[in-house]
Image (cartoon, rainbow, N blue to C red; front, side, top):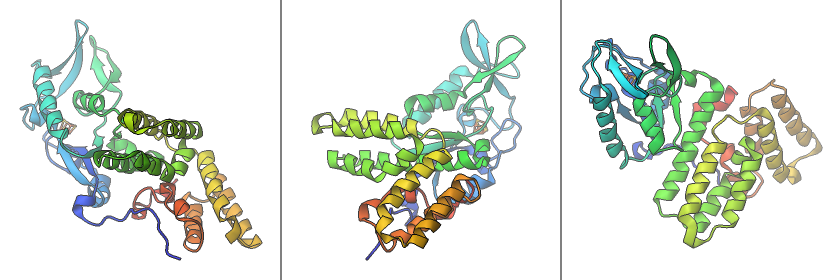
Length: 326
Ligand code: SF4
């Protein structure tokens, strides 16, 4: 019997999802101090699986490197961006952001990696000055605009990618978003959406069982006439349900459901081995990749195409080794 598992191998450069990235993370010396914030993980590892779309909003605003640093300041209830020399850079930064968003509109962008604390690129807790004491309440001007235009696209700070669970969750979201947007861009039918949902059933279940059910109900109501609005709603709910890493209990739930499709294939010994492996994962003794690998092993000889096509079993290229660390 041949296996038909999800296709995650990278066939060519154009198959790689396009990821936005703050330019300084690729080693470009565009920071205010003339330096960079090179991310080795982005450059050396992710660079093998993604095409980059580098952006430096400050350079695109006409600032040079080096340059006086800038910061967000509340002035008369309005958020402004001032340089250390007091020059108001707000309009230049906003215009550069608008120009860049017009270019992004025709790009198949699937995610963005940005820089912590930057008044232009920060994702959260950016310093906002109101008087002398800053509050950590801001979002970078450029990143805020990207999130407003693409509210479901995964955006993450480079520093948070050092956390194994956050890193895995970001890459999982990027690939899931990539599959969904690729489907939408190819004028999907109702049956395409149904197939997408069926193949992501256990991925969604592992993250959020109640949301997985609600997405199933949404699809059941869908008819050809309102497909566009169903796609919008589906995308919003799906990406929201994936926004946090799956918990151990959620993964155990998904694993047990999938194992249920293999019951006929097990001897008493192999069934016990499977259950012991899942229990060891639940106890934190082994990583998630171990029960997944065991299941994929059994699926080479048994199981239906439907269960083999579950993206939960291979949501991104296995060589990224993300499930070996969670
Ligand atoms: S504006 Fe963004 S890309 Fe440019 S140097 Fe600052 S953090 Fe890096």
